[in-house]
Length: 162
Image 1 (tube, rainbow, N blue to C red):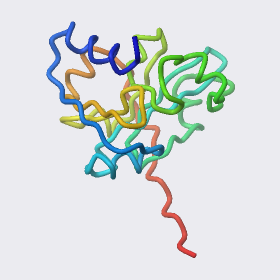
Image 2 (image 1 turned 90 degrees about the horizontal axis):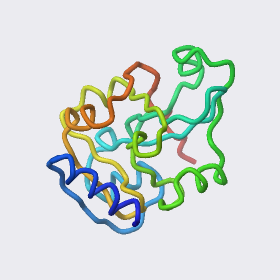
Image 3 (image 1 turned 90 degrees about the vertical axis):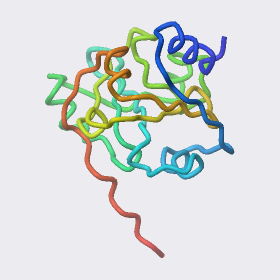
Image 4 (image 1 turned 60 degrees about the horizontal axis):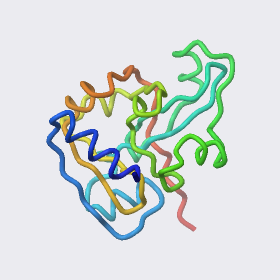
């Protein structure tokens, strides 16, 4: 079963209302938001880390970046780094690289959600491919995943124009 099918089945089994959209392939969170015709702030970017306690998911708006120093402090870790591509392939074998959904509970991986996502009425996120996006209510997501919520993301710096 593909991750898209697994995610949709999980939502259906739990009686969650959602919508599923398909767009041309997009590989960064900002590109996905643009392809799906939504503000970048409304799309959830899933970041996978490796710390001294194992792996975890960090969820931030697509136009934000993770402050890893703050995550280190919040979780009481002594070390933290981004998961490598090889680790991502091993952890999420049914997903296209970089398109993991934020359902850490499906993988026994803890989820930390930035407060900007936690406050959202609706969220959208990749569903295992670079073409599929799931849209659902923020409250349903919290009920299903039961993530920790904290402030650890900062707005992405503007890129210099050359």
